Length: 361
Image 1 (tube, one colour):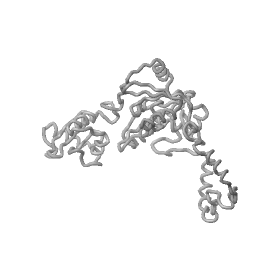
Image 2: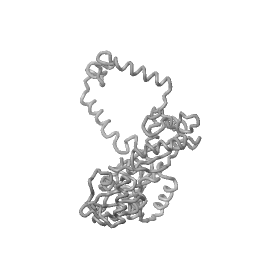
Image 3: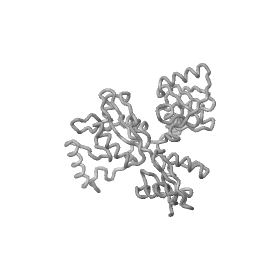
Image 4: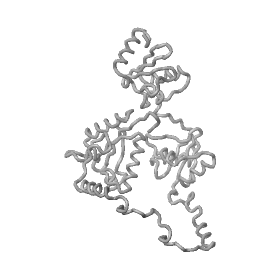
């Protein structure tokens, strides 16, 4: 979840070859969820989408954001809606998609083949008798030890032990780690525009760590991949030959080669009135001390006024907790919003506001 107050992405994944689609929802970001599907396809998952990715290759699929909602219930309902609208439920006659369920809940509407149902039935029947000595694993340890170990009784000389130790010591560290790719990477410091070049992802992270800046692998890769996700990390932009968009990488290589230094100003696309939490619905704030009512045309307008009123920045999650009753009030104010508060209360607030009365009247 993205904090106490989540934003849920409703997304669709499309097969470029045959046009088949998959609809889902996630609170971790739709691009991140798409990468999860790709990773799952590398294993033995028999989900329709995973099988299709293995068959056609990951490059033949792309993902798009359909819409964003604020609650899990809304996300489940909208997933259901779009699965029906886009006809992606794989078991319908006119289906053209990879969804194994009707949406809304994990396995709701899942259809199993007769063979699968039979296997499940047999397994459950056997499970009742798999206890005590009848369990095939009864009395067996997870590790081979004692006289059953192939090296039991073998004594190694001090020289042999030293050789084994030396051969293992540090063999998977740094560039020696087989997972480290020798691929060119770049970093760009946003405040100065300075670009640096590195021979590998490890060299990049190692260089920053020596300066006292610890970079997480996931954070840097999120920036390298670009898209609608994270733009910067620790005040820098990062690029890698095998991950970053070719056009973006070409521009960075050109700037590095010719010593072009241009500071970068990144605007947070999730701030201000376009933040997904900044709903354009009637909102009210009521001063607990005197019952005075303040009316706003949007949740963003309320937040902007609130920040000035209390003299500090307030998070949307904090306001939402007061709105939904998790907090009785926040910083001396009770909050109400058209799409959350019951209609009678909203009508009463509007009437009293128009009459110039207080909430306590």
